[in-house]
Length: 107
Image 1 (cartoon, one colour):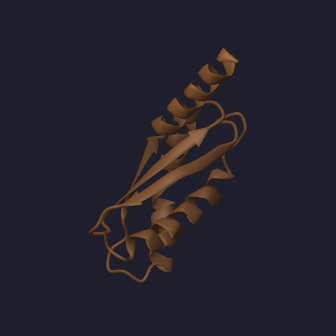
Image 2: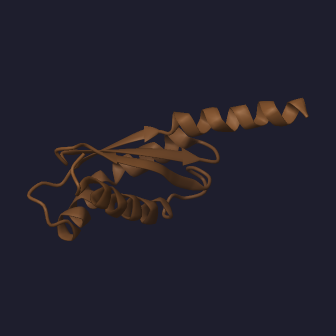
């Protein structure tokens, strides 16, 4: 992994989290950025989103703001290219929540 990838991932996470605050409650509940993974060549950033409810709607909302985010990233990053942003539902987080519910139902 490039030594710049974690730094760029942090900048992307901060920017996307700020924009996630703009998601109207009618679209999705409390939304968080679970993980950001930047490719070694810095051309792609996979952003994993979790939400209390309607995670797919939160992903769709954030994806609709991609061009705005890339413009803002271009201003902040000192690289030749701005990563292509790809949004995903955080399935790992959902699995963890399901396991927690199952464990608490056993006690």
